[in-house]
Image 1: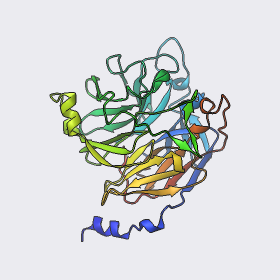
Image 2 (image 1 turned 120 degrees about the vertical axis):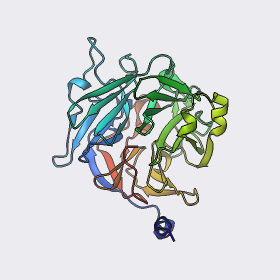
Image 3 (image 1 turned 180 degrees about the vertical axis):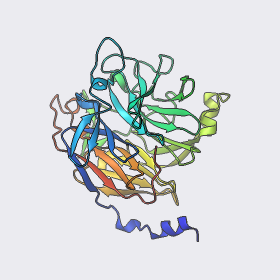
Length: 362
């Protein structure tokens, strides 16, 4: 029996769900989480709540935060666009660079990816998303930093500026040239299904219309062989080989045929993966993080907690071996509750041990 098979045998789904550890309590809603080379948390404040500081670094010793990379980068101005306007997606790579996906909607600036080198403490590079790669209803939500093929792959939810998810897509950014490509807009794998998000019996709706979110969660396996992605509102998780995704000779129809339906899933936000290809999904409707087991593609609630209100981003910290997940309370925001913001501090960051060793930099 292989080592992987032995570990799979030891994992008993009858013991699920597990209870996660509360790692931190903070005063503002946490979106997605990345890490420095030393294992310190750098995370976005969820843009849904219009935070003053878009991204912060958390000091576990003092239990305090400071604007990341500094206050100037969190201060909008008209003289230039070297600031963070509207950030949710955030990832780190093996070189110690934290990449921040600025959706650009809040201050009418061009959407961009900002890379900050935490080793040298200076700007690494900015990649812009020009009009050819975004549309009026774009909302670039999350991304994969693929250093093997030298690309960013962005999930565009298609709900910006009142969009209904019908323009959801993937966006490819070439790390070397900065060239961008918009793919699979409004196709079967990026479109939301008519499966409203229901929490405590209440559908998530804006002005009486159910909010349906397109392509949202996105991750890649440890060898960057497969890209996994899914609409938030949808019952299926999809995957495609990077060699096909990046093959510019394929037409959209040909590319669509290459995409596999990998497994069933609940409505979910963030995605992550471990070294044995078990996939982790933030299941907002059940205050949980679910796992799709690689051995049989079965779906289980891995962790659940009554305080895990709207589990958002989930990511692996290579330094301590934990998966971290935020509780963003998005469904309690004013737009979903007749203009009254019901979200309240404290907000929580949880952590838990994954089924197998996680994959960093995803």
